Length: 146
Image (cartoon, rainbow, N blue to C red; front, side):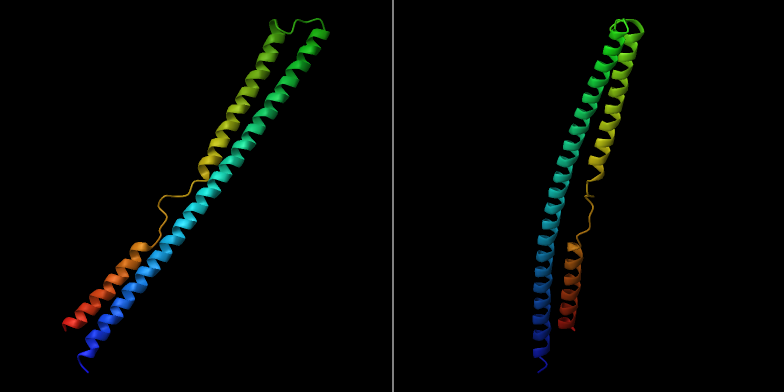
């Protein structure tokens, strides 16, 4: 009867190690799926942000073109040459303002893209499982030696 106890302890430890291994494999597979899903989500978010940024840039350029055309037409109707003097300064100022607004929009776009990144330091706990299994195996070996 006394010889059965160490064998039972050894079998129990083997089952515990197998269960810990299976748990680690399952957790690893789940972590891989979560990482893949997060990458897919990030890719979709980047595509949406890129499309929105491009649409905003087109709208801004269209508004600038219409405003410049309207301003030139009003100046020409008033008998002022739209390409010379203060009229040229007005249209150049409008173009500079639009360029600055586009630069600000691009900076905000880059900030939104970078904020969607997940941390590379996410803890998956796989090492903890192996440490616990090692402790239980060490306990079983110790009981066999006693």
